[in-house]
Amino acid sequence: MSSAPTNPLELPELLKRISRFVTLSDAVVCARVCKVWSDHFASAIWHTIDFAVHKDLHQIDTKVLARYGHHIRVVKDMKDRDHIMALIVANANKLRQLSITMTATQEFYANFNDLLRRNNTSIENIDISQASIDTAPFFMIDSFFPTPNSGMTSRLSSIKIQGLTMSRDSFSSLLMVCSALDYLQIHGTNILSWPIYDKSGAHCYKHTGVTYLAAPIEQVFMMDNQSKNAPSLFVHFPNLKTWHTWSHLDVNVSIKDIRDEVTRCCAFLKCLCSQTTALMTIGMLVQVFCNLTTIAILNEELSSDMIMAVLNHQETLNTISTFIPHEGFYESETVSEVKSNQLDTSGWITQSIPRRCPRLNALEFPLFEMDMDDIEMADWGCHDLVVLRIRVRGLDTKEKIDQAIQLWKQGRIAIKKQVNDEQAESICSNLQLDIVIPPGDNSIEERVARHLLKFKKLREVWLGWKTRNVA
Image 1 (cartoon, rainbow, N blue to C red):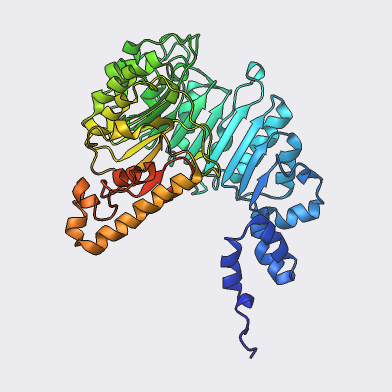
Image 2: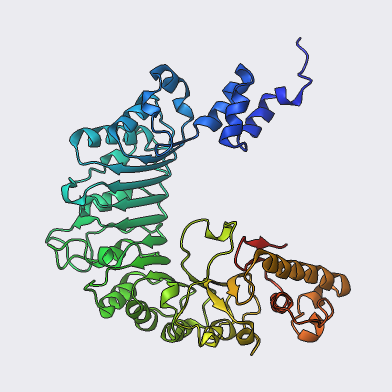
């Protein structure tokens, strides 16, 4: 009987677990230690293939591809037919995420369909775009279907489609086979409805699982210029909760048309993320929707009229935000620049939102600079605030932001030490805050910390760089 390994790093279970958390560069180093380690860390090395980085993957020896290809789970930025062939040679048949830009050639389509069929029972997220919309042939969706009678079902929960052409029947079939689908992003795609369809959408498949739709207004209402009476995209999603939309300036869809379709098809739609013009967004907030719980708007459209439109939902609103410039913005290592805003001379108007929305638990205006004089004019009514992402005038360096955050955290600790839990949950007066931040030079850092300490449930704060969390 062989003795058990004395080194914990010789335990296969531990090596397997470690390999899930190491960086790619560390995994490469570990794989060079010995053959056993190489086998364990291969999955970390081959897990994600980004063709924008791994440009020469198709030139790797086919034996190497065949040996390690089964570890591939995520594929990004696939554009060439050679990329597809490399994955087929590698026998990559357990993909979970795939991002591809297609070219309109029969060879490309045939190979892509082959790759998709190999992975249609494992793939969970797919992003498909067309390189040239003008030459886009009909997209055949049969490759999404698991093999009949196999007992397998599609695991697709997220689909992004751009620049394709398909029939309304094909679109319905796609929804039908993707029973796990929850998120759909679609734009620039022709969905041909033909004259057989009437406005009611009786022939359209209704997917009850999709709750999030990201689509411009023209995609929802003008999918096919040849079928003027075609039903909107909303008819497919009776349980839709969130609509993220945008539009071109010349979009020819009326507020009445939007209201009628939302009322008829989407009774549960309570979250609007609008990157349209101010006129269109205000029209939807005032005339289309009632009792929204989540609103996201463009920072440049943050005007007094927009704020008044938002306040139509003050009794139900729990999240209000403006869009950020890019992913990872909140974790930037530099203090973000504050751009000029229409409300620079009357920023007090924005205070109407936190003061008059009692259910608000997330306020995120990262590109708009607030003035503490405006904030301190009257208490915010959103006592259950959990997430706050704002800029404060004068709090413009890492050192000042860090100092304000540190005072806030110290204040929370001091409150818990001096009062019992029940009292700590109710602290909100300036008198009680004097316990933890005694009146001093009234610096901007102290004023901000005092304000943060008024919110008993506040857990996540961003004041210009790096989101800070507190238990």
